[in-house]
Structure formats: C-alpha cells, structure tokens
Amino acid sequence: MGKVGCEALLLGPLRELAGVDSVALVLEAPATAADAWEAVVRAFPQVGSARTSLAVAINAAYCSWAVAVADNDVLAFIPPVSGG
Image (cartoon, rainbow, N blue to C red):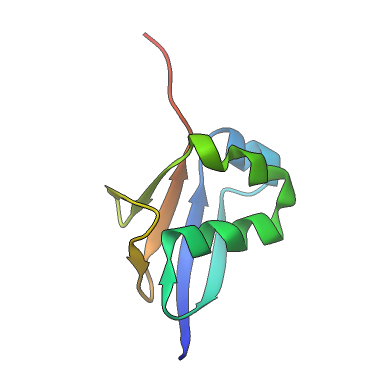
C-alpha cells in the first residue's frame, strides 16, 4: 500500500526514558496514531508502559488513537500534566 513518513515528539518523561525528544517514523499505510505509538515502542521499549495515560495530537490538534496519519504529519505523545 505504500509508506507514511512522520515525526513523533516525545514529551516530558517519555523524552527522559527514550533519551531523545523526537523520532522519525516510516509506517506502512494506512497508519493510525496507535500504529505510530507501536513503532515508537519498538524503537524504545522502555516507554511502552506509558500508553494508557497518554494523549496524542497530530499537527498540534488533540485526536483519538484511531485517527489516520498522513505523510509529513507531526505527532505528539503527551503524558498527563499536573500542577496548580
């Protein structure tokens, strides 16, 4: 079917666990945000347990994990934020 190239931003503790703040991904099309996360976990298994608490955004807009990823999209995997 082809490939989708995108960038994944790893924020907060994800960045610390992975040791990088972003990663270039090449996914099999069609691909979703969940597929992109799975590719990140394959590259950085130490971040895998974070999935249940993450939000995801594509091109600076929050979205569901089922949203399709297009070529050149920028995904952000966003951990929970607390504070006051």
